[in-house]
Image (cartoon, rainbow over all chains, first blue to last red; front, side, top):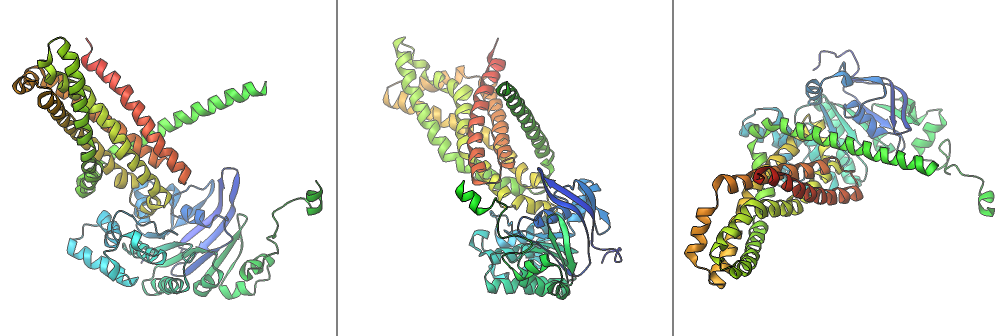
Length: 268
Length: 262
C-alpha cells in the first residue's frame, strides 16, 4: 500500500500533445482514483492509447503534467522512471508477448529481470500467476500457439508478475469472442477487487466497459467531454455522450466526412 | 526559380535526415555496448544468440568456403602451372583465403543470412509492441534484446570466417592435390612455411571482427529504426544487406591498405 493514499493515483493537469500538426490532446485534466476501475472512452483515433503511453512515460507531453502516485513521471530520471514502471503494469492490445520464448518464460521474464528469486520460488510464483488467469496448463505453449484471448491473459499474468499497484489496459475487449470477453471482464474486476490493483482501461466497447467501470471519462477532439459513474453517463444530457453510448450513426459526430453538397459534386 | 529552391530544400532535407540517422545509429551503438553487463548477468541470452546467429550459419559458411576453395585451386593451378609454379598452390589458396576471401565473403554471406534475419526480427518486435512491452515492464529493450544480438554477431563472425578459410583450404586441396595431381606434401609444407601468423592470420581475424561489429550493428539499427509497417520492414531488410555490403567492401579496402601497405 502506498504512502500517498489521499492523492489520486494519476493526476493529469492541462495536458497538451501534438502528433505532427495534429492536436491529440488540447488541455486535459483528469484525476484517476485508486483501487477503482476507471475507463477512458472515446471513438477510434482520439488518442486513448497515446494517453496510456503518456501516463507510462513512453511519450512526452508538449505541455502539462502527469503525476503517477505523486511523482511527475516526465521529470524522473531513467532509473526512477524504471523503478516506478515496476509498479505499473500495461496490457497491450496485441499482448506484446515475446514470441521466441514460451508462456512460462514470458511470465517469468520480469521476475528474472528484477528479482533474485531462486528457480524453485520463481516457478511457484509463475504458476500462481498463470493459475490466476486460468492458463497454468498452457505454460509450455509458444505465443504463436495461443488464441488472441489467451495471449491477452498470458500478458495479464506477466503484467501482474511484479504485483503492481495499477494496470493499464489498452482496448482489452477488441476482437474477442463473447466467451473470452466475459473471461477478461471477470479477470479485470477480480484483480481490481481481490488483489487491490487499480485499473485504467481505454476502450470503445461501451456495453462491457460500462458493466465493470466505476468511473468513466469520455474524450473527444482532444478534450474530456464528459465524466462520471456509468449510470450518470447513461442519463447524460450531453448529445455527444448519448450518440457515443447508444451508437447512433449520426449526431454531433456526423455520418458524412466534410464535403461540398452532393449535387454540386455530381454536376462538377 | 521555385524548382531550384525546391532542389536545395530537398537536398538539405536529405542531408539533415542522413546526419540525424547517423547520430541515432551511433547513439544506439553506444547504448548497446553500455548494456554489456546484461550479458554478464544473464549469459543465457548471449548463448541463445550465438546459436541463432552463429551456429545456424555454419553449414552455409562451410559449404561456400569449400566451393570458393575449389575454384581457387582450379584457377590457381591453371595460372601457376604456366610458370611451373604449381607447388605454391597451397600458399596461394591459403593466403587469398585468410587475408581476403575468408573475412569478406563470410561477412557478405553473414549480412545476407543473419543480418537480414536480425533486422526482420527486431523490426517485427517493434511492430508488434514487444519492445514497448519490455519498456513498460521496466526492462530496457536495448540491453535485453539488442546487446546480446550484437555480441552474438561479433563473436560469431571471426569463428565463421575461420571455418570458411579452413574449408576453403580443404577445397583447394581437394581440387589441386586430389584431381590435378599437385604433390600432397608440397601443398601443405609450402603453406606452413609461407603463411605468417601475424601478417596473414591475425590481420584476417581483425578484419572479420571489424566486419562482425559493422554488419550486426547495421542490421540491429535498421530493425530498431524501421517504420513498423510491412513496407517499412521490407525496406529496412533491403537496406541492411545493401549497406552491409558497401560497408564491408569499403572497409576491406581501408583495412588492407593499413595492414599490408608499405
